[in-house]
Image (cartoon, rainbow, N blue to C red; front, top):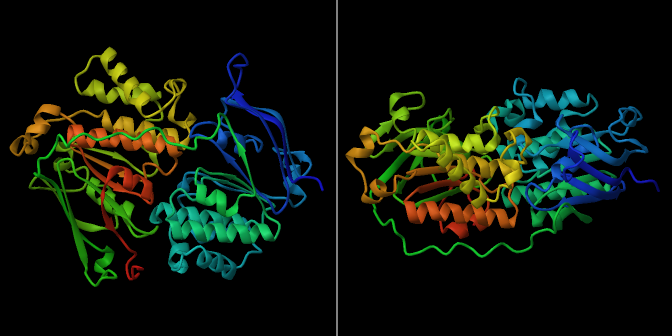
Length: 482
């Protein structure tokens, strides 16, 4: 039987740069109907570029080499789909799967008039999206990253494709939602769906992949030795952040309360956990003063902070850093990577030369390859963009505000370091080795410089590495299990 998708010596390289080493080279693949093949490898090795190259979806600066065929035709040729063989995509950044100006249901139905609303609701239920009627009426920006990832699979299946290309499709999902995703995809494979999967997640590989194809260097199976934290240099218990929150609309939680609070002191770490859609990202946005469905009071060293652009937030701009879930969106698209990170050091008063040197050191510590430093953010993988965003957050200027000087710890006065770092799923696109690098860098900030960490994550490995206190959240009205 002829394969549905064929690659022969497929590669990706910079356009017009034949003398430079290719980004990806020598990939050969035969994917049959009903089969799931996974591309594996380190973050930034070119898995996503390889998966998208054959369908003409590369950025203009990159080009495809080798041969790629879909249903017997050149894979980028629309003839293949004109004979009824469709390709559907689940892209790595959840929001990129939907247009922002239409609600979810209208976009899904627009993909295929033959798909009924009952089918859509059934898939949502199988994926754990129990309140599907409400979710489908919402716009993309009203959904969590995990909800959007699962809805993206629903939108893909609604097209009745012969081939599904899924790029890190479970990165924003908790373990129960990930397992539900695997069950549904396995079920569709049994009905003939072919799947080209890109993932770092060993549970997904074990759950759905029939075969694995390594991309780039050999896949990392062991992390580097972990950072060994010294005796805590920062032991000051002074309270930095206090937050008292109300559930959206004042609805009570599963435990009967209408709200809850959290507190963070110098050098402390707190990880917000819970299933997708519980409100973890919304909570972090409230702390940062960004638009959020949560209501509550955020206090920084006794000063109540109002949402941006209130003057109280502008005062604290250099004391808080953030890496949001859509990490690429926090990077300046007009600056090269090294320039973007060095700008923070430059605003802190360092010379141009010292700023670039410190930015290079920060990027190297986080494992961002030197050949990425001259790229724009659009040319980075999602994992690389997460690490660059972390480097940029750590490099922002340290301001001495009226509030900081009023109650200031000895450690802060000497270190001049970032007081609070807010991170939303900072390792969702990282392989094992790069997750360790991120954790080590955060431990250095926490233990040596007194930076408090407020993290939202589904990654239990990161929680263990950082030794975080956890704050579990549950969707309004949902009873916690166990």
